[in-house]
Amino acid sequence: MVATPDFRLDGRIALITGASKGIGQAIAEAMAAMGAHVIVSSRRAEAVEAVADQIRDAGGSAEAVALHVGETAQIEQV
Image (cartoon, rainbow, N blue to C red; front, side, top):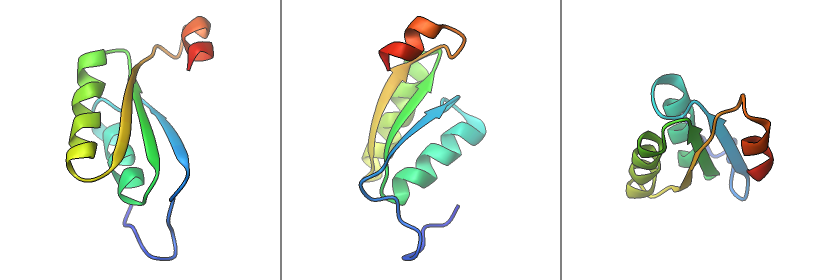
């Protein structure tokens, strides 16, 4: 994704699952670059915290949440 003036996500919140690496991480970084506040999630807290730190270091807005999407109770907490 390339941020363009016509496609901005300012004021939006995006929850990205599987964001600790690969495509999920790339989507989180791109959405943050377009102005969204991103909530990066994965089962591994350390991994998503590192991704959130990278996004914040690049000037984006992010928070990390350890989440297993197969666990209903965890989803309801988010």
